Structures are given as structure tokens and as C-alpha cells.
Image (cartoon, rainbow, N blue to C red; front, side, top):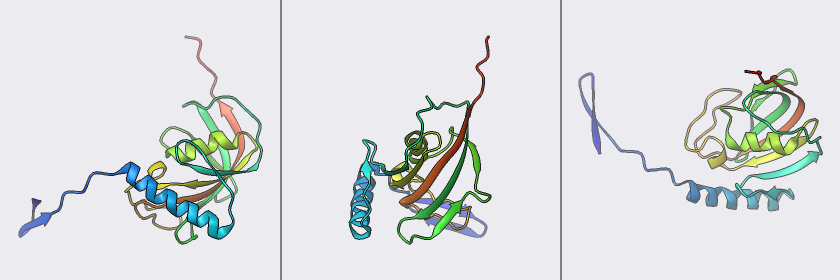
Length: 162
């Protein structure tokens, strides 16, 4: 336990427990499996723990890297309450892969150009213990995400000849 000085006195603070990624992955996996059973959802689990359904087969368009700009359409829900937390507002969303959660990056690679995929992303591949505010609602810590993602176009920045 530590103490923090604030105006007028001290307060006690508990040190946060270390994040147990493997333990949280096991918890999330059990929740996802039960959800799929209850909802008659059939999805494939990849080696990282991500569950996915290919809704529309995309074109193999090569490799994604830090120079790739992607236009997509998506909708995102928290699995626990099935309420939307974000979506592409005008039907499209432009982004680059660096900085995105691992589950989203894997989803882009699975969908491919003009493909569409549904992702059930365990919290260790999403926002982990963080609370994320933005979009349509706040995402609590250790939330499993349910995202439908369609890749509309992909553009590679030309390589420089230096």
C-alpha cells in the first residue's frame, strides 16, 4: 500500500495487481464459447485466441505494413451487453494499422480487400484492463468485443528509392 499527498491530507492507494493475460484469455475464451453455443454462432479460433467468421471472402491483396491506408466499414459492440460502442459514421472509416489493437489488425488481415469478417475479440487482444471512452459509450476493462469489419479499399504508400 502506498500513500498519496492531496490537498489537506493523505489517502491510501492500493497498488494495481499485475495483469494476468493468460488467465484473462482463459476467462474470455469460456465466455466466447458459451456465447457461441447460446447464439448458434459458428466461428473459427486462430492461434492468438481471436474468434472469427468470414462473412464475405476477400481478395488476397498482399501484406499490410505501416504505410498501408485502409478504408473500411465497421460496427462494434461489447459482447456482454450487445450494445454498440462505435461504428463508421458515414459508412466508411480511413485508418492506418499502427496503433490499433491486435485483434483489429488480425481482422483486417483475415477480411482482405472487399472481404467482410465478424470478430469476437478477447480482451487481451483488445483494450485489456483499460477503460476506453469514446465512440457511442465507454468500454469497461476486460471487455470482449464483437466487431463486424468490411475492407472497402487498400492503398500502399509508394516506397522511396533512397
